Image (cartoon, rainbow, N blue to C red):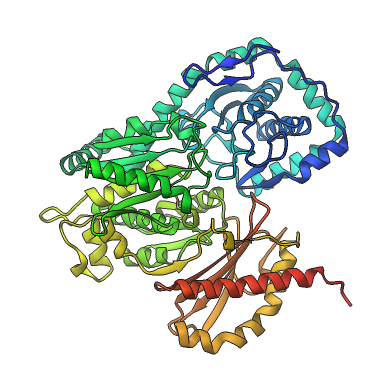
Length: 634
């Protein structure tokens, strides 16, 4: 076997410059079988890449057909860039900490080199870090990031991005998917294998040898961009003053953060070096890549360990008030906090995390005397609590279909129209993107929360929490010695289904999501009539409207006429009160990265029983629609 390359920072072995033996002639049947289990969407291309199909397998081996399919993915991207006028592009490549990442990246790097690209390989790197480098360095034409984000360990996949640091989205994502699907054939696969075999070993060796330097450059770029995101200023002098002011306030009061990194790519990122520049003490747990201690998705039970570690840290040092857990690629992180009044650490719901960040950033615009026509961009299942917060600050909320590329795209559209979009993201999973960032980032989330608890009122200058209390018409709720728990208690009260809960993910038979939605719509008028009196009595709900979401477009209207293409976007039925305001909703969308149909319900107030009732109602409607599509027509 060829000698591997050893990453000097981690000691992990990557495939070396000599191609590993690959005695395999792909057949169309093999390729079609491999492609059938591959999910291709703007949110990412994913499948179970583990050799034996076990989604929790930790083996680095790939099935031969999957290895070839990965070559085709890179070839499609090279062709995509060439058509965009980049026949000899410079491409950054990185992986998360999954075990199959090195083998997938090896093949993709070889294809890119064979197609004339210059490749900068970072090995294991957090997604926001490679994207920050691409965004700010200004020398790359695109990037390839090998990851399956929050999916289980045996899964893997890829995100393709452009020189602006953003993931390929919208029509461009659809074109890239079309190009890849159309290219899959036995003849093309043999060509991919030949191209990979012909990649020059010295060229591959040069790419591997440069890895430490490339990762260092990316870390420096990420730290600089994180400063810009934190302070909201492109001016270096003002950025420095604002950061110094915040660090002084944090240092005077004291603040500690537990970073439970769960073996993710963030273990090699800047967390432990950047947070202390804000005066924050950091206690890292499971910070070695591949030191997986629990499931990947950072929601629900996955935060229990962090909660326990925060309680330990707080007992030893009361300054420790926050903790966070990222997913495998480190592009989002959810939060726990210590509630002094209750004497224990608590897990924040994903929707609460995003709501707090929105509150912080909108209040921050006023704190610094900035803003203008402010807007918040969110994905379609983001809670209505964000709308109430935005309204208090005179901002609007615009929603896009699930997928960070859609949110980033919509934010750019609004900025082109003169809107100030300081914060955007995916409230349904706690994913926060703060401008000028273009990807969900736990450091952005922590930055917002640190400002929220640290930029306190001074004589003649109200702090962030006081501004929120005033703007929401409840100045009496402000106290000078507030904690994060006090802020959480003032959030608008809504009860929302957690997207990682089993009851939020339906296994269905229908593969045509447009037909499934149409079947739900066909049953909806009668379903509404059967419950409208009860809905009015319980929640004051007297009417409804439907909205469909496709990419960056929000399409109000009932029925298939308000959908297009494969009709895979989100569908939301907004339940309204007498004033025409949202009092709840029912939402549905087929996952773009997992073989499930996602559903969500929300109702105003602290009402878990009501949320469960609405979700059960929606579940019944979707299951009945699914069954109706399986019955032969008469």
